[in-house]
Image 1 (cartoon, rainbow, N blue to C red):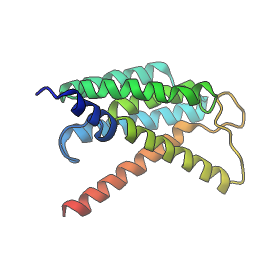
Image 2: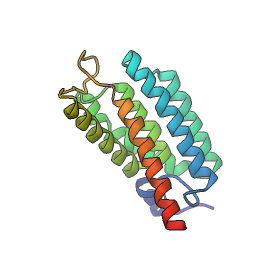
Image 3: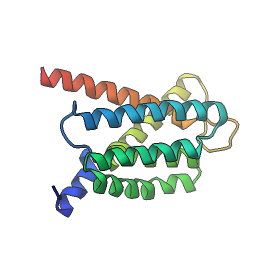
Image 4: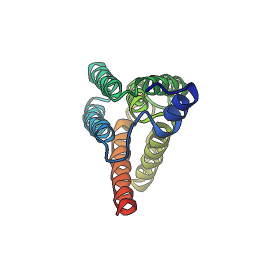
Length: 174
């Protein structure tokens, strides 16, 4: 089934390039992949202050293949391009590192533009809250000795979002 351009735009921006309901195989496979990608990226970011390009590229290709299989590739590519452009400005301003920018591309291809931006905002708020609770001001600039790995908080935000969405879907569906 070929969607008109406005439907692709809507899918890319709001509902993400996901087909079917919340418990569909497509949705659950994408989330499982994102959670696995995020946890490993967070581990690398925490230990080495970088996310390996090979890891990100592998997951970008894997998510694209998954979207292609479920006939959501056009919306996924559109989301990927928009997230890449939107998240470039904070990267160039030094708010986070290039690994975090590339990580946002994977999430953009998987979830869509607004869900990815919402997840990143949630992660930044979580980062600021944790830094306030610990009495520190952690900078998000790459290479700073006082920096905190943003991928850790993006991964935590993704896990909390997925858990919340599962809880909401169980309450609404039952």
